[in-house]
Image (cartoon, rainbow, N blue to C red; front, side, top):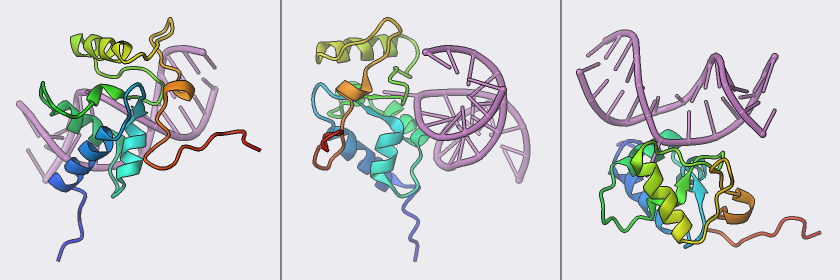
Length: 117
DNA sequence: GCGGTGACGGTCG
DNA sequence: CCGACCGCCACCG
């Protein structure tokens, strides 16, 4: 039997599930999503899966950006993504970067505050 | 079957 | 801080 759960709709659904968990007004990186999904899924796969989404999807794809805090989607799609995030209250600096330390999603677990002790 | 590509990310200079 | 490189892996011609 096959325990290869990497290449199937299985991991695609998982990616959707994780992205849906990103709260309003927060962002996560592709690598972070990949890490949460696990199963050997890489950041590039996350990007590819999100690219397959169509308009009207219930998946908040706009909340996924790269680890630099910048939008990776080129072209008009990227401009739309930026606008959607601004609409959620997320701020961009002069270089179109988001402060991950401020708007970054901590993950599905309990939020941990750094510098607590 | 092979080589190029991409909504990435870590490392190096 | 920033650009250049390289590794990664599914998809496409």
